[in-house]
Image (cartoon, rainbow, N blue to C red):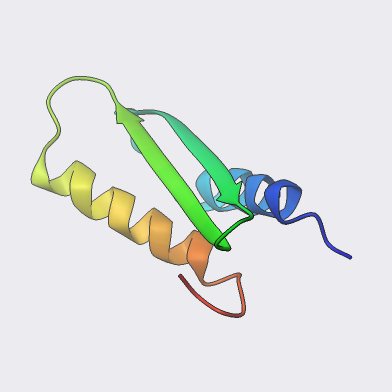
Amino acid sequence: MIDMQEHLLFITKRITHLYYESNKLRGIIAFWREEDHIACLDFYFDGKITDEALEDAWELSAGIISHFAEGF
């Protein structure tokens, strides 16, 4: 059986490394809530959060979530 937390972390690192080039992103916290099968993502940016930074976070979220069969 797959460890969903490990899978979520792997996918988050991979998507961020391959597709994200902004220097404003400082970190992502990704954790799996087993009790209700939900992936939770928190994004941390340097400085003021712009519309572009929010759009980048949405795109990264979509890329990460697309790797899970049920979607979230």
